[in-house]
Image (cartoon, rainbow, N blue to C red):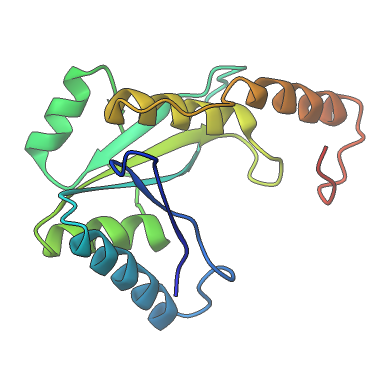
Length: 171
């Protein structure tokens, strides 16, 4: 079974993982099914999923969050808020793709937020911050500690620049 966390006012539920990543397609389907069933139990009408979008764009210290949605109407409404859609040729796979598809099949709407990353081997704290800022804008929630991600990003960037990043340490 998955772990879930709830906001103090009950308006936001967060799927927090479990014992690890699904290792088989069946485990992935079971995981997504559990998330959807739990969302339905609480009468949720909208599911958000967050992830990464590997890019070659040089974004410096300002990665963008791109968006995908389960309907054209929802996608257009999100774009009116200033969000850029994922490129039409992008594939959303794994949990992020399946959860959006299962949400749609269950009669729910779904939004995928994907922050640009340039190197999946290095923690991308600025990308995480971009996602959380985007999620705040969409949910009208405030997430404490977001600014701390800048200092974590600076530490990683410093290690990478000095050639000290080994990929197995965390600042």
